[in-house]
Length: 324
Image (cartoon, rainbow, N blue to C red):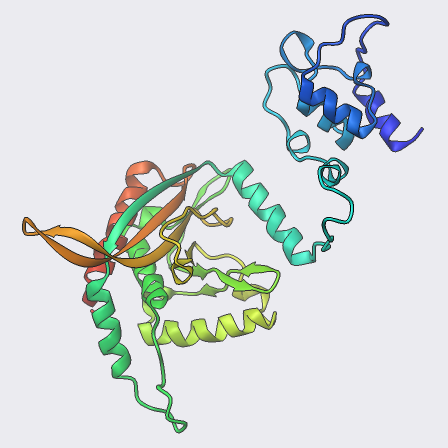
């Protein structure tokens, strides 16, 4: 018996009697016809036994039909490759096979969305003081023999430091959820999302709360370079207690990031832009950066997440406190 026939047989525990009217949605009928399935051989999980889209997809994937009213399984949600290809004209696309990195990213992000109950908190930060401090800090960098400054701190380096300190000041949010216990971390190990050809990786700044802007900048430059060369060691990108994902350099105003296990939080950073704000009852122009904190609700509740984000905002808007 062929694979397709076996899949259909697995879904035909209660096939419709011969001559009986088949209850099936138009979409289910179309998918079954395009895939060569006999719709009468399927068992419906919709109302009154109606055959619906997920029943056809489950048959093609070889899974079990979902019970009526039950949430669709991963197998029934993912459209089979053969069905996807049939939606496009032959020759209208090329296939690029997934490499091991793309497969790992897909697996981890699917697991994250399926197993971690996310919620998001957003805040706007006035970064004018931060930009001024960064300019002064970089201007103090001594020159190397080649005439280049010894360091050049980015806004993202300062964000990493602020996130690390915020976790130290709201320690109940510096955690990892496990089925048996909450792991409360002593250090703030901050992962930083780095785009590389074919995907992304998140190298980790260990003990970021103890490091200066300069140290974070130098370490991050080295990690990012070796990440793009695919020369990172596993201990340089595995673990960590939180992460920062910054798309501001691409002009993205705000977004929500997917939590990267075993983290309980991830901070998504948007672009700083000039906006009109109220200061002392009068309009003024300020540079505002929107940030979104995605939180694992199993580990961090709403009020705790809000406290963490508020502390981060306070540090960003008063960056001199990070030099104390």
